[in-house]
Length: 177
Image 1 (cartoon, rainbow, N blue to C red):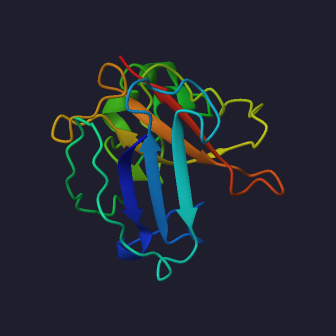
Image 2 (cartoon, rainbow, N blue to C red):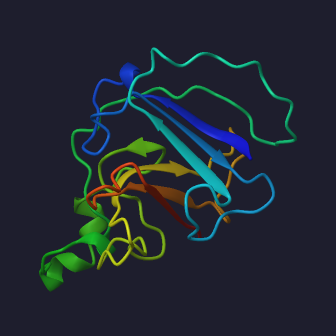
Image 3 (tube, rainbow, N blue to C red):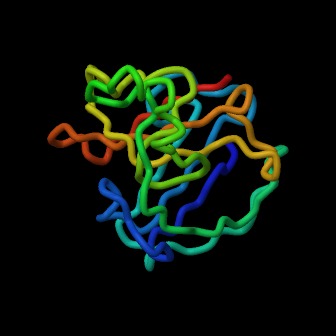
């Protein structure tokens, strides 16, 4: 697996719900094939750390990867709205066609807010029949700069378990065009 992201939550101006007790997250991904609704450790690996002061830098490992590392700049988004598929209330017909014009979903690599859906709800979200009942907490989008793509310009969604005893379990789903 290759490193896809490192997120130092202590450096952020805000920690979204579901990540309050964590300080650092690393995400690794299979270098050859995207995981398909598989468990953490099967084609992808997310490691979450409650304390970052115990972490020590490792010497870089030579890995064949087209991924290009770059730092992200964090900003606080005051308003982020659900995509049409995540709207839980009835929308008046006259507003339905213009929903996206009035209620903008912020896309990109983001922690918290609403997922930027491409095809439909995240498979584990609508009826939460997943064994860990994950709740969406962040997404990693495709990026030309980083040479990363979830299929054709897609987004990877990460959810944290909400079932008693499974809060440290994670789920991944991704969608593309």
